[in-house]
Amino acid sequence: MKLLLAEDERELSNALCRILKINKYEVDAVYDGEAALEALENAVYDGMILDVMMPKKDGFAVAKEMRARGDNTPVLMLTAKAELDDKVEGLDAGADDYLTKPFAVKELLARIRAITRRTGEVSETQKFGNMSINPQNSELSALKTVRLTRKEYLILELLIRNKNTLLSSERIMDKVWEFESDADISVVWVFISSLRKKLEVVGADCIIKAVRGVGYKLERRE
Image: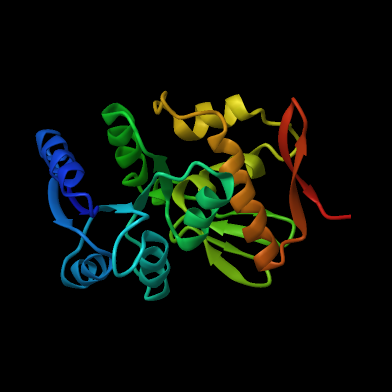
């Protein structure tokens, strides 16, 4: 499996390359945003590890540009920023998942395995109200269409399949994050926030309702 690593801190980049190669990944390393976009034009990758703070173009700009030109390479975004808005910005830009520095190697490897598992494993188009999600291209459609990240897709599919049931954050974690045991429970809220924005963007006639201390469920707008 071939990965692109875009990280401007040379020592960290070299360490990550060693770790990934030990774990049987082939890795190309670049050190700025423009070099990352150029690499994506010249080779096909199974996944990309993308740092936010890079010279020339930051990770947000790289993710937006690659998605705008139709590149669906799975992206794991590395960020030193822990604020909710920064995490949501990364997902909105087109990242499939994020990992906050510093991180454990075990979690990094788990996140890479997760983003490189294709959504196409799910065979049925799921619908609720006027919106639908397509497993072949991870698109959310209603009046407009946007791309979902893998985890956004899996969460929304889970909510649709359990539309009459409140799902706790713990259950969502179990179903979507599976063996990524190092992930914090707050990550569910980050992805729910991003999904709510995308439901608004496409003009969906449903919302993700939160019941404090209980969980989440899909509801039609009143």
